[in-house]
Structure formats: structure tokens, C-alpha cells
Image (cartoon, rainbow, N blue to C red; front, side):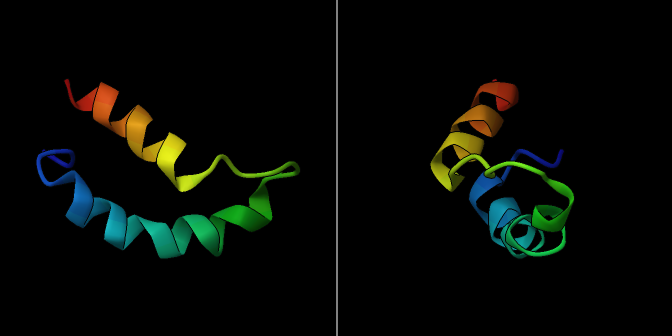
Length: 44
């Protein structure tokens, strides 16, 4: 499952999140900590 090793997964996703994905968002991106906490809740 993608969320088993969340820290490793986030290390891979973060450059995309801060790069290409950011250009698709009209407003401010949520902070990394918020995204990680949301992913942790999803994991449970």
C-alpha cells in the first residue's frame, strides 16, 4: 500500500507537489505538515 512507508512516499511526492502540481493550484498550497497529517489520517 502507498501509505505503509509514508515518510518515504512523501519524499518522492514532495518535489512533484512543490513543482508541477503547484502550477495547477490558483491559491496557496497547504503546508507540508498539513498534507502529511492528512495522509497519516488516511493511513489509519
